[in-house]
Length: 351
Ligand SMILES: NC(=O)c1ccc[n+]([C@@H]2O[C@H](COP(=O)([O-])OP(=O)(O)OC[C@H]3O[C@@H](n4cnc5c(N)ncnc54)[C@H](O)[C@@H]3O)[C@@H](O)[C@H]2O)c1
Image (tube, rainbow, N blue to C red):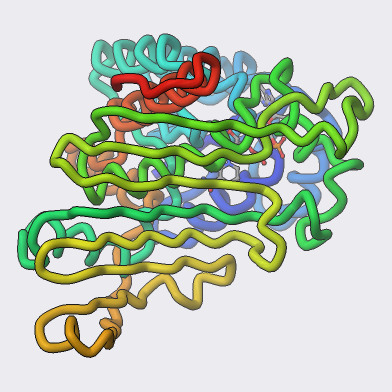
């Protein structure tokens, strides 16, 4: 299968590796409007015969045999580039967040439905096998009904140099600027933690969100105004009656990239804790039966489950669109819009 990649920045090398590591799947061509980034990508992959282009238009004009295209452009460009890809008749695997807002996300869903092409969004943390098992156990009803949910996403790139200096690199600076299409932590990583919670527990009925931007980190660097939120806390009421908190920050010193989901149900509790190194991604924590009175937790080691990249390829082969699709991407985008609304009016809002 032949794959194209639009955008050769930070995350594109992961897409390249994931696709090229699958049998009979090859990244054939890439494009980027930034010549320097394109050249770095091509020189890092000199041994392959990947062709590079300076625009999506040129790539689509010169390459006619893709089976699918990965969209790894910044959030702001997802809509226009994805619509172009779909219009050209290709299956599309789009990075999260699907769009900048719900209205754009709905346009993307409609275009995907009309095109009848495979459409998926890269909600990475679904790739944890422990998370997949947690979802399966919750849906089976074995643990009873969810009552209380705690979902946290912690990063610390504003307080550590683990991923470089955010003050100097465009790939971090655009994430801090609304003018550059970022909805801050909420749009960047908040989408992951909302997808994580909603896909496991069920839809959210009402939400109350507090967004926070810390201006003491500075107001402006180069052309970037640093006005996007750095973190948020949301109180949520789920359709099924459970309540919960969903939180995310870039100031979580000591955490490179941690997602923690705890679901307390009427017959037990489940917990997953994902780390940057993926060492904990297969371990599910469970407290049920006699352990409930002992405050004791067992662990279940869960066999590896397919990656989103593998599911995208499988969807193309079978013509059955696997999850997470654009519809799910838009559902999460709606929650993001509602968080912004709730923060603005200072009240709970219906989803
Ligand atoms: N799923 C995940 O866990 C995960 C992780 C990191 C990033 N992401 C997402 O991936 C996307 C890219 O993030 P990144 O960190 O790689 O950003 P980046 O800024 O490092 O790279 C984006 C690249 O896209 C290029 N680009 C911009 N507009 C373009 C266009 N119209 N055509 C072709 N190229 C274009 C830029 O020049 C840049 O090289 C974002 O939407 C981000 O949210 C997802």
